[in-house]
Length: 257
Image (tube, rainbow, N blue to C red; front, side, top):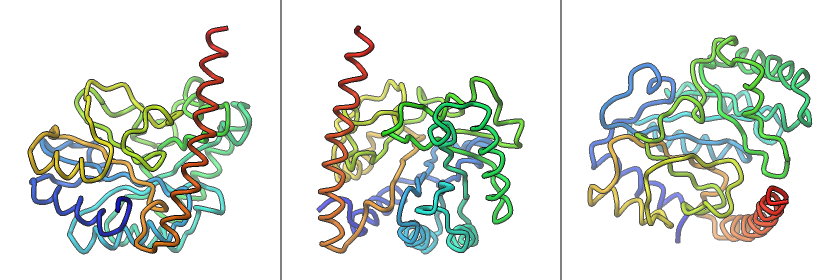
């Protein structure tokens, strides 16, 4: 079975065995190592699952970055502090433009307010856009009128990583082969893989078929050993993927017209 904690641990062990170093995103921005990996985690729901991931990584002396949203489903100050105390980076998973329905002025006000709220808990150096697939607004467009560097932010993955050099893998849609159902969590990259399952990543790592620099994005709420929760997540995500396919199809049809 895929998307279990057992499988996640197998993946980490394979990456460690292959000799990758593990950097937070802020560390990578400042001084990228030659053979390194960024473990990115989008804490959209169930922040307790992210704490479990952080503890597993800490037990193996590796680290990652955890992006929390400002909504109640994600924002948990105690968990953010605990993860940070385990030597992981905490970042802001912003979705201001989507929540403010495209109003740039209101969106940047919310961004600053939320960022200050986060910084009362932990240090925040980097941010990352939340896709908000059900919204027609792309929160990355906030930076068409503003600069996140004006808020002492040093990096945003979709703007500050050269994906011609850094391979990007994401479990968006509960699959590693998500091109057909990903609305915004995708990048332009020359890397072409046949990776569908986590076992495919493990095999590619073991055989030395992955590049020296990677960012792997996890949504920890999707990973569990509990068979009931596992099945619930499978059903929910499959239904969500159908809706996302419809949105993508309608968007393409609109563009043609």
